[in-house]
Amino acid sequence: MNTDPKSDDGSIARRLARLGLSLPPPIVAPGGVALPFPFVHVVGRRVFVSGHGPQAPDGSLAPLRGKLGRELDLTQGREAARLTALSVLGSLQRALGSLDAIGRWCRVFGMVASAPGFNRQPEVINGFSALILEVFGDEVGLHARSAVGMAELPFDIPVEVEAEIELRDDGPLG
Amino acid sequence: MNTDPKSDDGSIARRLARLGLSLPPPIVAPGGVALPFPFVHVVGRRVFVSGHGPQAPDGSLAPLRGKLGRELDLTQGREAARLTALSVLGSLQRALGSLDAIGRWCRVFGMVASAPGFNRQPEVINGFSALILEVFGDEVGLHARSAVGMAELPFDIPVEVEAEIELRDDGPLG
Amino acid sequence: MNTDPKSDDGSIARRLARLGLSLPPPIVAPGGVALPFPFVHVVGRRVFVSGHGPQAPDGSLAPLRGKLGRELDLTQGREAARLTALSVLGSLQRALGSLDAIGRWCRVFGMVASAPGFNRQPEVINGFSALILEVFGDEVGLHARSAVGMAELPFDIPVEVEAEIELRDDGPLG
Picture 1 (cartoon, rainbow over the protein chains, first blue to last red):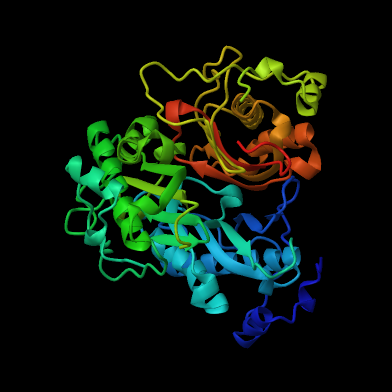
Picture 2: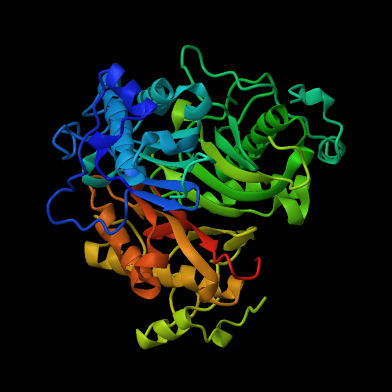
């Protein structure tokens, strides 16, 4: 399995480049916290994506922290969701070798750290969905979705997304 | 694919009619909010149901809003969960053509907007499960379930349910 | 299907015994609450695990109650997550006849009842993941994971875990 993200020269990688998007390096967890699970877990043709948050370009968590409706406004929340999508794509590219291995997006579970009274979770998670649809197109990128308000998220991140996708039928088994 | 819900004359549709239940029309999202995802997403024989809330008969969100343990009591919460089940069935009927295409209910994730100290989420989500079991019977309708308390839900709805089902083996592929 | 947990003499059961771990009896729900769903729901080779909390040795809910960051500290939260793992294994053994029927852990969704400002959900849910990895090993036990903070959980339990696993290819269909 190809784990060098730079070597993916498939059509999705080229589309990312055309859109001026670059994927972040492996996730650097805050010091001292063991995360004993893979960020992407392939079982047959099913791909389980662990909860991801927004990453900074150096791989650490993005400085966007806190809750929507308190520390962060809608624009910042949407940007956090967009950065979360890039984080997920980085993990997928490293785990699968190429984003072209993805056959269908299935399910996106979008979690938004929400201060009391903040009810605009769909508009926040639209930052995630818009990027996935732009990169993969409607055929592959379409996904079922929930966008809901959490009391707290790890490390005070504002957005966390868990997802499931399926590999292409004609690709190698993961 | 048949998208006219009125044309489903299968056995589940007849059971709904016998029970005096009618399904709501397509979901009308509150003005101005883009919801760029399908409410039902079929991938092979797997059917991913996006987060649904309670609908009013005209397709808009039901006027039941707020949190359990604050604006709404247990009876209202159960009614919200029942309306959410009808909303899901409406989406499934439109997406699948007939509710008879459903082979097995798999997973129900029941989210309840909960004021501090409200811990009776299972009794709320029983309003969802009871309707599914009544309509589909124990063989098809049985489902794994979680019922948990959210800080906030979109549009201040009190209940949101995400689910997964599988199509019948002998039906046409979705 | 073998539903007597004592009769499982497979390799996982022996490993549990070697580790000095014993599985709790069937879940005794708090009085008067109907829970109209199976704790483990098998559909083909897919196994859906309903939300579980920590059990006491007599089958009732463990006395560990309340929120992380308020009633409970990190050590107690990790213990609650460990007890939740044992509860899940008890349900799986009763439903599947033997834990050896498990082919792959797929997804673990770890929910932590969180007081405002508690952001160490991953360290709590590590109590769940560590036990699963110890018992099943890295090959079978590895799982995708999210660990997030809930406003409230049923019965004031501090931890709830929902999961999905797959049965072994060469085992009997569930």
